[in-house]
Image (cartoon, rainbow, N blue to C red; front, top):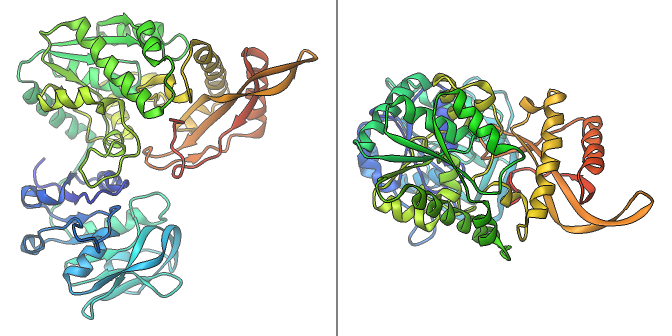
Length: 504
């Protein structure tokens, strides 16, 4: 699709959410770096994202403002983007006394097209430290409870908001974006059906007759990727690597799944290699790098040198959390698809990532369009490094067995009690410490275990799932009775942020 709504990425961890919200509204949008503004063609609208930097820094990220004005399209600045526009229009930016992070209240002014349909006051989500000193020519569209402007209109086409409309914590954020896009002329429509056709065409063009190897795990991302490559008619070897870091009975279930959908896969048992490589290592970043490097090595040892392309199911959140959407972003964690060897292969044009512009829910819809069964597309996310990121500290077979068995009980009961489809992700994680307990009238000294279940729309933010006490009690009781090595079960009630969904 040409002339997409352009979102300029200044490095905010929420930037991709803007793209997603626009797609939810039925329009097509793409992400660009600030220096790529001229490569956007003639976008119907431009949004400048937030970012971790300050416009007061000498080398602060900038935009070609003259060209932005030449486009003659609606422009919305969000947080950093608003502050940048404020400077361009002759206003000032000054450091705030404290960083404002979290909920605030929006009091919109009457008659603003940007806030049409909003209530007199609503919750918004802030994430900034600097504040704007507006230029005299700017119109205040909204304030917070302290009377500080949080929304400005600079002229008939340029707007700025200090809050994030893209996150779910902003009550009417999607409506704000919808109102803004209502000012654009002929924004391109977006549906997953039409995008599927574009993905098929793009993938065929990118592969260009070369041989492809694709790793499959039975998870949503790799299964949808395999189905996409299969439908595109691309010559692909589908390889399932048993890393020894998988869930209970996973290998057998994966083989049965792909047999049902008519895709032949090869299984490689490399569990001893992975556990050996991880022995003695407790640093979470290094564990991810070890797994990522070894995964690629196992792949290419198995298929030889005749395979020219590696296909990966990397998604948008994976890219942004690894800070690879641009040098402006901050790294949250290194994704297993972004280790050194993968980046070397990417530099050699030997990696394709057809799903890298999609969010998890969009991938699920794509899977349905491709005809995958619901038990696949509705499955909870599972991390590429497997149970290693649910085993803080050194990874051992003893710990993995505890996690597998506890996780199996947890997921089984969520299915039985009709809660599985009401949470985004659920799992058991081992707490790397032992606690005193009593079993069979004897003192025990065994591991503590954490249960985690979250609700989310996109994995960029998450809330802990409010499971019924009775269900939590049933899960805990079964784990303590059925899983050897555990004498204490806790429930994780952390949100993201500040916590991540996975433990590592």
